Length: 234
Image 1 (tube, rainbow, N blue to C red):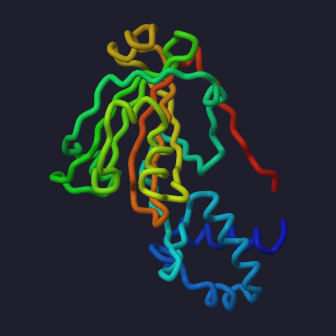
Image 2: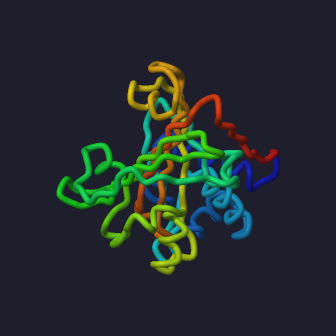
């Protein structure tokens, strides 16, 4: 293991233990250089590792911040580009079941850092491939950042629309996965039985400054869904 990897592990341990100066915002790069007695390029490589893991995010001109996990227990967390659905690039039909403007419930307000009186776009869609339902989607978008949605827009990628309509070069995201059992309604939509297993994939979307943008909950048909995990050696 090379030096920058050792430093990344050391900083990660300090974050995990909530050590002073590592709880909400990390020391500046110059301080980290002095602490670990290495060059700036080494520290930058270490921070890149931590950012790829989803532990920190950097705001230009402001600093390096520790990202608090949105899901606390019962979920496996994956940073960008690690968990991917194998069928994501095939011909998929999106059927919009519901699109409304409403106030968030308590959990959604917490995850999106909203008040109970803020407004969100709430979206329900059914994803099908070759005529077979593959998953149920429930999405929530902060109306302060996504000021307009209609049924036509929801026939395609919401994130692609947001990037194009609002001029964002990139949208950050993190993915959480857990396994549960189907409710009666979910089972009917997916063509399975109540209490059959289901794969839940929750995606948190963030603006370039890491303010929460939206949340997507996907409930997958366990027999028709395949995922792969992209890992790096080291």
